[in-house]
Image (cartoon, rainbow, N blue to C red; front, side, top):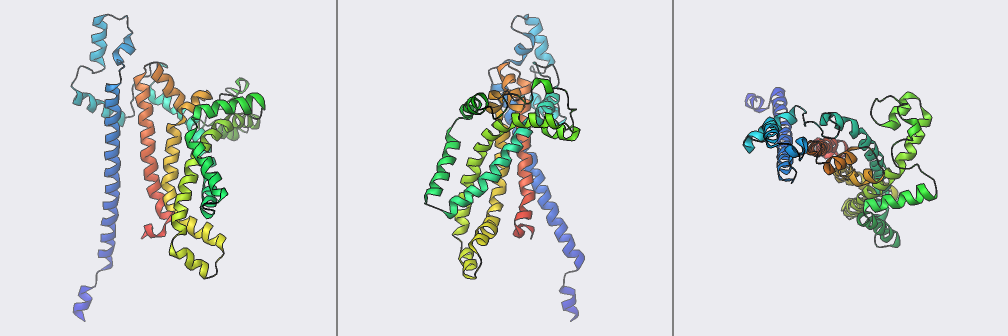
Amino acid sequence: MGGAAQAAPLPTEGAARRSWRYARQTGGVLFSVALTFLGLTCVTFFVGRIIPIDPVLAIVGDKASRETYERVRIEIGLDQPIPVQYWRYLMKVLHGEFGTSLITAHPVLQDLLRVFPATLELAFLALFIGIVCGVPLGVFAAINRGRWQDQLIRFASLLGYSMPVFWLGLIGLLLFYAKLGWVEGPGRLDVSFDDIVPTVTGMITIDSLIAGEDEVFWNAFWHLVLPASILGYLSLAYVARMTRSFMLSQLSQEYVLATLAKGLSPFRVVWIHALGNAWVQLVTVIALTFGSLLEGAVLTETVFAWPGLGLYMKNSLFNADLNAVLGGTMLVGIVYIGLNMLSDLIYPLVDPRARK
């Protein structure tokens, strides 16, 4: 009896094992994030060296003397070995230093903080459209597999993949703005509403609500709705397709037949049980969709003159502003890393098995 008592693990030992397991998992996640971030900085650094743009020439101009060229080249560290240059670049990135933009003469980080909220505002509404419309359409296609409803939804999704976003944007402006007048034109606001709302979040729709400026809000909303719908259609196509695939997998499981045999309604089986299990996979899909919206907003922002990250990077690239291009690329990469971490944190909320 005494031996059995000695063999039983103490509660403190169990707590210590759990703490060690959590610490090991947390360390693994942090190591993975650090390794991914290191790879991201390597890619952006060496891409900056491969791009056929001379950063020194972009600073001094093509009419500068050879002495001026060499002096600036030494000042920005291009005379150092590549490993030394990368180490300096990594240290600057860790301190939030991406250099100075040649276009605005401001620190790149300051420019990114100014333009990024506009892209977030566009991407959030586009993602909302993609989720609210894409998930039900994907479920509806799965439960009508092979029927005309399924074929129609798959065709609409295929169009979303196939049509160039700039073409959709131009057609949308021509039809809904120029012809029908249902929405506002390019830009975020009419000129008459500029500088009325104080900047709090950088998102005009939210800032106008905080300031109680209803007229500014509706003007901003009708400027936002068309470009967000174009991007939302692209995200809807991807979300609907993946939802259909996940739901077909779930509906073929034995638990679906078992729950139906027990008398549960088909609506509850499909929309509660099967879709609930599919959400585990959809979390990653939605996170990556949001990241692709941030990355793919370049053409949309260009067509709609939307002053966000995409338009900023396009103008920077055309003006050989390498610091701004690499800074924007780094920001998008960091967002992707953050979205993957967020999806890992959400898993236990949608899948009870992950909590164990």
